[in-house]
Image 1 (cartoon, rainbow, N blue to C red):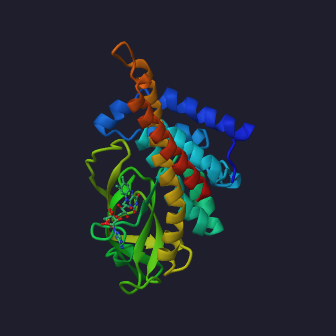
Image 2 (spheres, rainbow, N blue to C red; image 1 turned 180 degrees about the horizontal axis):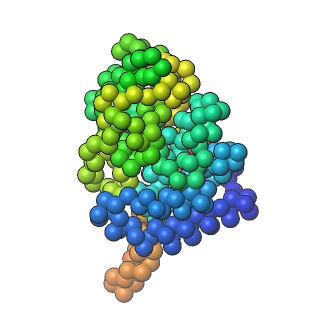
Length: 302
Ligand SMILES: Cc1cc2nc3c(=O)[nH]c(=O)nc-3n(C[C@H](O)[C@H](O)[C@H](O)COP(=O)(O)OP(=O)(O)OC[C@H]3O[C@@H](n4cnc5c(N)ncnc54)[C@H](O)[C@@H]3O)c2cc1C
């Protein structure tokens, strides 16, 4: 397990840190309060290689590995959880699904736009009544000639309204059959595909979480990812990687909180000295640092 950064990795980390401090920090409160999803920022992140981190260079990606990906999410999340979340969802879910299960033609068609940040990706698995228990999903796709007709609603989807393209999981077989679900790519603008209600969240408010609605939405058979019936198994594999990215997100936010708390404890004076000098405060900071270190090692091991 790699524990120290190479000089290239240090360079990548420093440039992302610099970007986050210059381009995100000054705006994060305003974006969060107004629930503004900063679309333009993601295009600039694309120029830095942050929107296709695991995508090979031949499809316009950065061609990096999970170590760098974890580090990048952390650096963004240290400054703003929303931006870290949106970047992680875009890379791991929609882009990751097309990268892992798309045909050569599908990869060439969608990955360059996603990896450059020109397009934002969404990934629809969850429905109102099926979160962890995704196999009971109600969203259905029925074959009609060379097309599939998609009907149903996906809930709590990151970039459900703003996403330019979505990977959508829908039932094509029997309920509870693990081989009864298929993955489809649906582009924004396809008739019958619309964004629905945007969630009013308590936190991470500048990462858009919304409904995606499919009403007699016709999708060409060429947009099926992998084989018909493989979608659930594909989704579980995608979530394996997604869990590392969400762990990195939590880790980055925790590191950001510790940095802020430590800085404040050194600056804030009570009884004639910085509160960091009081052992009760120092113990709290030490406990936070220990938990973060343990979580970091666990994430690296994953
Ligand atoms: C900010 C945000 C962004 C999201 N983005 C996306 C997205 O882009 N695409 C997408 O498809 N989904 C997305 N989701 C949905 C997310 O994936 C679901 O929230 C998740 O699958 C959990 O489902 P649930 O919230 O319905 O919880 P539930 O499944 O209802 O679970 C509720 C609680 O019960 C526990 N539980 C459930 N089953 C068991 C069990 N068998 N044993 C023990 N405990 C159990 C869970 O751990 C949890 O604590 C997003 C959610 C949020 C909050």
